[in-house]
Image (cartoon, rainbow over all chains, first blue to last red; front, side, top):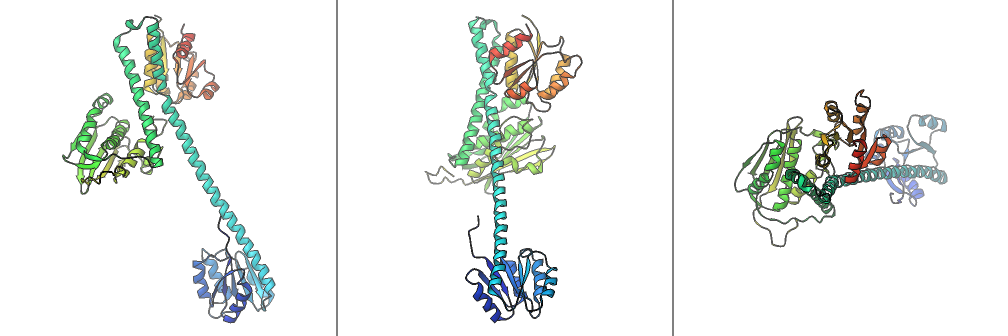
Length: 389
Length: 119
C-alpha cells in the first residue's frame, strides 16, 4: 500500500492574488503546486501526479479550456480531474464541460470555500479509490507470481521424487532375485555374465541416485549461498583430457566420436572438481542431444580468459530457449522425451559465475549447439584463506 | 521351463533391462520396447503372441495410454492381458488394466502378476 500523503493540487491562474486566495483556503489539507500560465501548467503535469487541477478559464495566450485540452493530451494527466474556475455564466460552462473527457467540474467566482472544499473532497476520494484498485492489481500480480513459483517448485519436487524413485525398481528387483536364487540353491545354474550384467545395472543405478542427490544438494547450496569453491592451480587441457578419457566407454557404447583440440598450458586458479562437473554436464548433454554425430571439444586461451568449447551436431536449441535453459529446473527439450532433472546447465552456469566466468551458447536448429565456457586466466593465487569466490 | 513370451513396454532402460533379466531367470522369453509405438510393432511381430504385456504409462513419443488405445482397437491383439506398471496408481486403475503393479516394482508383485496370466 502507498503511504498516506496529502493530496497534491495544481493551481493555475494568471493573477497572483487569486492564487493566494486559493492557497489560503487549501494549504492545510493539500500539497499545492502553483503556476501563472497554461504553458507552465503543461510542463508541471508531465512531472507530477495531481489529485486535481484548479484551472482559471480567463487567461491570456492559452485560456483555461485550451490548457485543459492539452492537459488531456498528456498520458500522465489524461484522467486527472479538472476544476474550472470561471466568472462566465453557468450555461456556457455547462456546455463546455462536454468537450472534456473524465472528471470535469466548474466553480464560479467569487469562490465559496465550502463548495470548493466539498468538490475537491470528491476528487480526493476518487483518487484514493483508484489507488486502492491499483494496489489491489499489483497485489494480485504478486500473488499470481508467487503461485507460479509454488507451481514450479511443486512440479520440480514431483520430478525429483520420480527421479529418485525410478532407480529403486531395478535395485530392489535385483536384490530380491539374488536372494531368491540363493535360497533355492539355483545361483550357480545362472551364467556368470548374466549375474554380472545385473550387478552392473544396479551399480549404475546407485551412481544415478548419487548424482541426483548431489545435484539437489548443489541447487540448495546455490539457493542458500553456501556453495564453496576450492580453488587451486589447474591445467584446463589436462582436466578436460582426463575427463574425456573417463567417458571413453560411454562414448563407445553410444556410438559417438569425440575429438579434442587442446592448447597446452592453459592454466588458472579454479576449482578443478567443479570445472570437471561443468564439462561432464556439457559433454553428457552433447551425447544426449547430439544425435550420435561427432562431438568436438577444444581448450584455448582468448585474451584474459581460458575458453572451453563443446560442440555437437544434434537437434540444436531454439532461440527462445537459449536463456531459459540456464535457469533452474528448465530445459529446452520436453521432459516427456528426455529423463533427468534439467539441473545440469543451471549448475554449470552457477559454477562458471562463481569463478568470475561465463557460459555462452551458439546454436542452430537441426545443426547442433556449441557451448563456450570462459574462465578468467588469473594465474596468481589469491591470499590463502580465500576459498569462497 | 515354460518359454512363454512377455512384452515389456518401458522407457527407462535400467528398469526394463532388470525386469527382463529377472523374468528370464524364471524361464520367460522377454521382448522390450521403449515406447508405445515400438510396443505395438513388437506385439505384431511376436510369435506366439505374449501371455502378458507389462506396460509403463509415462513414456516419451507414444505413452502407455496411447499404446492401450491402439492395442484395444487391434483386431488380433486386443485379447492380450495388460499389467500396468506405474507410480501413478489412480490413473492406472482408471483405465481398468487386467492387473496393476505399483512402482517401485517389488519382485514378488511382478512375478505374481506375470504368473497369474502365464501359468
